[in-house]
Image (tube, rainbow, N blue to C red; front, side):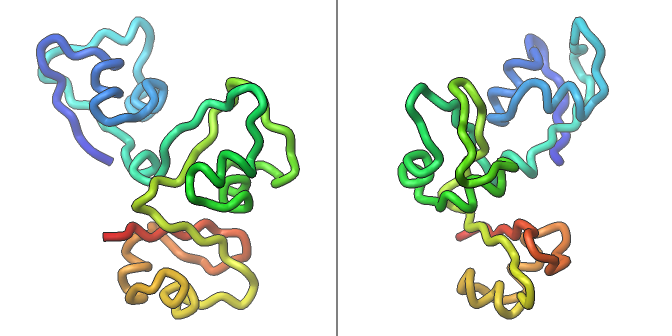
Length: 149
C-alpha cells in the first residue's frame, strides 16, 4: 500500500492513472462515498500491491486464453489461475483479465512443494522468494510471485 496526499486539481481518475490502477480500487481502499470529491491535503491509501504484479487486458472478439498467454509470455494455466478460470473456459468480449507483468514470475504450488523447490524454480535465493510474498503456505494451488531484478 502507498499513501498519497491529494494535491490541488487531483481527481480519483488522475490519481488512478498515476498509479496505473482502477479507480474502484482507490474508492474501496478508502471507503469513499459518491460523488468522490477530494480535498487538497487529504490522505489516500493506494492499494498498489496487486497492480505492481499485473497488467489489465480487455478481451476482444475472437480472443482465447492460449493466444493471450502467448502474446504476454505466460502460460494458459497461469493466466487461468490468476483470473479464476478453467483453462478451457470461454472468455467474453470486454471481459477484463489480469496479465502477469513481464518483470514478475509466477508459480502455482503443487503437493509436496517446498520453499527450496520454489527457489530453484525462480533461480533465486529462498529468502528473496519469501520476501516477495506476504505468506507462503505451500498448499496446492497457491500463487507465488517473484519480482525479477
